[in-house]
Image (cartoon, rainbow, N blue to C red):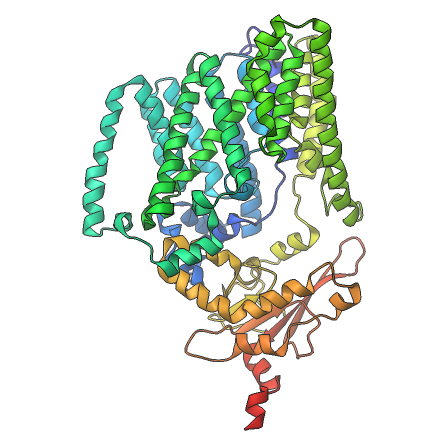
Amino acid sequence: MSRASKPSRDWLAVVAGSLLGVLLLLHIRRYAGINHDAVLYMGQGLLHRWPEIYSADPFFSHGSQEKFSLFPRLLALAFGVAPPPLVFLLGTLGSLLLFGAASWCCLRAMMPAGQRFWSWLAVLTLPSSYGFAGMFAYGEQFFTPRTLAEALCLLAIGLLSLRRWVIGFGMLAVATVLHPLQTIAASIIIWMWLIQRDRRWLHALWVLLPVGVLAALGVAPFGGLFVRMDPPWMESLHRFTAQLFVGRWRASEYVLLAFDLCVLLYGWRSLRGTLGQWCLAALAGGVAGIASSYVLVDVLHLALPAGLQLWRVHWLLHWLAMATIGAFLWRDVMARDLPRALLLCLIVVFAAGGFGLGWCAGMALYLGWSLLRSRSSEAFLRLLGGLFVLGILVVFGNFVLSEWVFFRMAHYRLDLYAIDRRVLAFPMFALALAATMAVYWSKLPPRTRIIVICIVLFPLLTGGLLRWDSRSPINRTIEQAAFQSGIFGTPLPSDAQIYWDDDSLIGPWLVLKRASYFSPGHLAGLVFNRETAVDTNNRLGRVMPIIEEGLRCRDRSLPLEAREHCHISDGALRRACTATSERRPDYLVLHYDQPQHAVGEWTIADPVTGEAAVTYKLFRCTDLLAELPPKPEEGQH
């Protein structure tokens, strides 16, 4: 598995390595359900399946990014065969396996045997988050076209590294129709690599001329290239989608970016061959993409570059940095320089653990290790290695203690809080386990290897599959209630718009099969259409009192009795439901002990205790207005 002289002929190593990779994916990237951006893509698939219902939803009524991707149309076809929850569960599993396989194929094309296996383990186990507030990650544990496009981009990189140009560019073309933003970002780095090989690739810049002409003529989508976003639009984007602006990133995002750039810079200078070339390409492409995003969006406020999100180049930059760390670890372990390998582990822990620039001192020591080693005794180096281990254990202990608090709050139930997954996700923990197994694998006789596969890897694989679904019981129940529009016991008009409290789009879109009146998820579409920003801001103004009072009711600092009797005020309900020239919601779904009469209820029970975990109540706006007392000023007349 690690350094066999003829890995292609060692079928046991191939089987064991494949099983180990799948195990890591199953245990570290457990299924998170239809959440994050997967909800939005589900909605886009529903729109193509039932446009008569969902076209009135504010996320789609003014146009969204779904027209630039083939993925929603494929989802619509899949929804005709299987329900969305099953489509997304199987889709997540398939895309993760494809991502793992594509990562291996890419690394196999650019790295020597042994080293590439450690790099593969690194990209599977080390933190994959990048960008604003860790909002994004490569190889996500929910179903979006991002993971599929990333896998295809990695396959393209591997094929291009092998000089298989037609198939490689074909992979990029397929990735583009699935998720153009991730593919454009990766293409910047690929273009930088091509320029290294042949300066004639600089002629690709001539394509900007016809793009400029199309933009000047206002041809969609190029017309937004010279369109400046006005102050109200910019204010909405700054308020709700700050990740679009590089200048709004927090210090922690810049620290992670600086760490990745530092790793790639050292990789370019110290690693020879294809990987070193890709490190240089990632350095140049990363700086170009992020700097361009800052100038075009933060400074010039241009609409199309804001939608292109060129800062997403960080996904491939980060993936290459994690692969490079794996190559460094392999080099140090093969050189039997364990203290230096431990130092690198400590650096990664500091960089990923939010210790600011604390990793810089360690990186300086790592870069100057050869000089230190030549002037130090073995005893001193072993002492340093022990100190590095102690530092990792201290950080790990603090991490476990913080996670144990949440595990205790979940009543020590793994179905409510998967603390084992959280521990495995600690930087270097899973990689250390997998790398240790790889080191000792070559020392085992063939018969023992078969035993390890049968009694260790296969049982772990079975357990990983059984526990891969990490959705909470409540979320699982909500998703399984797909397309049950009568679940509240009340028929709903097909054109009804429902406001579902608790930030839910799953409730209206999936369960009730109706348009949502407003959800914070709608705000993800602001950058693609100004009218979406105007419409959602108006709707937000209506329901903002409900949102604010709901947050207060869920505040854990309130006494339990106060939370149990907390409800939405008459004024907040009246503001949401009063008829004006603007669209109002037809129904409200709340889960508070409201004094008003509900037209229906849906109770979800705790599968362990059998007690009610949450009760959602459906209120019709016209009924609420008839039941609510008049405003004080109205009563005076």
